[in-house]
Length: 525
Ligand SMILES: Cc1cc2nc3c(=O)[nH]c(=O)nc-3n(C[C@H](O)[C@H](O)[C@H](O)COP(=O)(O)OP(=O)(O)OC[C@H]3O[C@@H](n4cnc5c(N)ncnc54)[C@H](O)[C@@H]3O)c2cc1C
Image 1 (tube, rainbow, N blue to C red):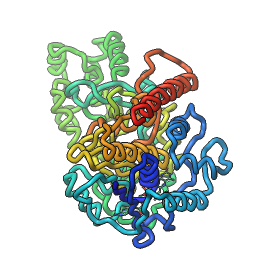
Image 2 (cartoon, helix red, strand yellow):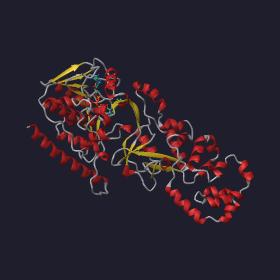
Image 3 (cartoon, protein in one colour):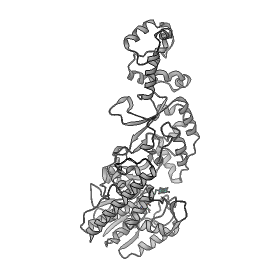
Image 4 (cartoon, protein in one colour):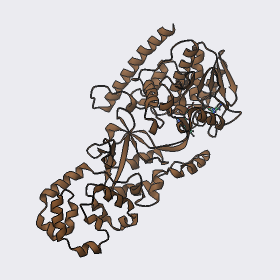
């Protein structure tokens, strides 16, 4: 007997797969005895918001996941297909009929017992699948936190958008780490003053998503981790002292311009205009000393901002001083940017999200803006004009565990392999991804009871790549992930057209899945 806790998208699929494998299962669903703050009914697999499972075409990430699930006998996708409504290229369903029929189908299965009860603690024994979703009841969440350890459990999701690497313009964005510390690990999108001000204005004016009633408490929680639009609203320069600070970052393209300037410099001009030396950081120390002696000491004394006039001050000292700068001064004195001609006025940094470097996370861009607005405004950032977003920024209630620390790609806990988890709780995102997790966790739970080895899906499939990602991403920066082509292993050949490339990903995924599932069926038989 297996226990599945939570009858949402993942739990419904898990319970069905267990029963299909010939194993008895109890599905514990707390509704309607105890409602979550977002669900409205007592039906299984309720769609809490949109009625769409995403794009239908199999050369799109969501569509490929649908097709994989279809081939693996998913009940969620089968019922979605049965109750699809027209949605212009998306798989959308009549949500009422969809959930009602799933409830009836599972309730009438001889191997499935549906119990309407809240489970406040992880059962100590037996094979258990946790699928309690983003709004796991507080008692169970507390017990899970104890089980996983405080630092590996999150109640809220403050995520920045994730961008496909190849959609970032590398003629503009440059690789560097701040102060050149360690290897060059960030992609940096430099802005000049004009670009920054336009971005700032658009960000301040952009439309926000409405919070759900139960999310107002989230807003309070996030006081220490402000949305980017809120930082922007606090003042013209506030972002330049926060996530967009340019200190320690030199734009190599500007450096080239400087070098051109150096070659063009006329020493005469420099002597006549002592300040011009600050525009040339490449001048040698010897030359500098000579020039400084010719400086008019009056000027230096009278001008308290003389730090910008001393090109010999070590770079780290400069940075220290810049950090102490009063934003007011910078606003009043736009020339302050000449303190380091290679330093952009502001910089947006992107951090690598996956091992292969196909996905990049916009650092510090957690946001409550509407998704359309995020795309419009963030594409104003130089280098991101054509950005393809695989995940938009969010700040909402979301219970999830740090899967890279805790789970195998079979969805078993490392600490207790008879305990499995799936759905939003493990950091996959969206209805279809939850069904996919339910399929794998249910299949493996049944295999454990049947004395078979748990399985992981081929990493070239969308399902396999998703579970590989959540179990091997960097635990430090782990954020929930929707299905997307960026998590698939590269093809090994360069295919320029995106449509053709995605078509090739699909063909490879489906061929590998068919081969794998054929072997799986043989192993069960
Ligand atoms: C407000 C909101 C809006 C969303 N909108 C979308 C959207 O438009 N599109 C999309 O793809 N995704 C959306 N999501 C994400 C969505 O929740 C997931 O895609 C999907 O529902 C996850 O499936 P799941 O099975 O992990 O969780 P759920 O579908 O939430 O299922 C979890 C189930 O566990 C039950 N449960 C919780 N605790 C216990 C307990 N202790 N004992 C017994 N039962 C328990 C709950 O009642 C629930 O039925 C939204 C999430 C939220 C919170």
